[in-house]
Structure formats: C-alpha cells, structure tokens
Image (cartoon, rainbow, N blue to C red; front, side, top):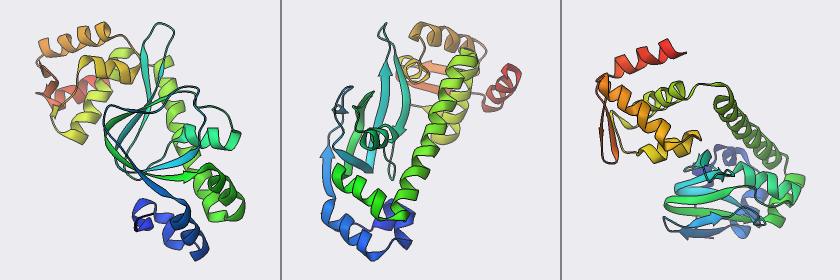
Length: 223
C-alpha cells in the first residue's frame, strides 16, 4: 500500500504497536471509487473493512413502497458500522452504500480485520468503540423517525445544515425527504410554508436561510 500517515486517518494509530502498523501497511490496499457508483448492495458479502480517506458514501435502506431512508454518511476518517457488524457476524450487508462524491478508500481484507481483533487489544477497542458510537447515532435517528414530528425534523435539519454549510444550502426536496425517511410531498409542502413565512427562499437545488434566528426560534416552538 502507498505510504499514508496512519495517525491522520485515526488518532489511535499514534499509540499503536509497531507490529500492528507494519501489519496494516502490508495488508491494506487503496481503492478509488467514482461518484455515482454503489460500493455495496443489500445481500452482498462483506470482504473488506473500509476506511474513507476522502469523499463521501451514503448508507441507506429502501422500504417496501420504494421510499429511501438515509442511515448515515461515511466521510474522511470514518468507516461503515454495518460492514463491521457483517465482518464480525459473517452475515450479508443489510443496506445499500452509494458513493456521493469521488471517494478514496483504504481496504483491510476480512481475515486480517478479524485476526487483529484477537491479536491487538488497541485495534479491538477501536473497533468496538467506533461501532458503539455510530450505532447509538443510528438508534437516535430511528427514534427521531418514530417519535418526532416531521416538521420538527425538517427544521432541525435546516438549522444544522445552515450552521455546517452556511445559509445557502445546496440540496433538494427529494434529498431532504430521503435523509429523513419521509415523502417528498410532505417536505415540499412544509418548505413552502417556511418560505411563505420568509424564513427561507427556495430555488432549484438550493435552500437559502433568510432568517437564521427566526428558524431557530421556530425550532424551539416545535420542540
């Protein structure tokens, strides 16, 4: 594998034993995947433990009526918790993984992944800590879908996205619906209400937050 400063991927490599670092360098491989491709389909066997070096991957489920629900996204320095579960249980992948941006990955073959969980305590701790952290986020998402009103979840997403991306958010009604696991029509109807209140401005592929404080106040009212 090409030389990569492992501590830039995961901080735990800073204190990892030299034997693990050498094993990782010898076993891992690089792979580039272009935007628009599927990295994994539901029912696939998991053969590698992936680490994203750059790019973005969306992991999602498709319901019986064809609706999509985003479980999580994998960005730089992150991995896939469902792949970890598959590798540990030797079961098939239960979702789909779609490459949203050109992505470069480090792949660790499954036999080394499992061997290192037995051989290196620091690797074992990292895997289970990461698994627990992401799993808690997925459970929180499912609780939101089950118990929170859709209008509250839309406003929460707009507030979070505006903080992260700025007041001009590049997105679509379909993308929001897909991420929240709801119907596009529901999202469009509520966004138009927010536009009527002059909180946002809608345009093709873009939502501009006109009144950030007003949007935050609405979020407090809906909670």
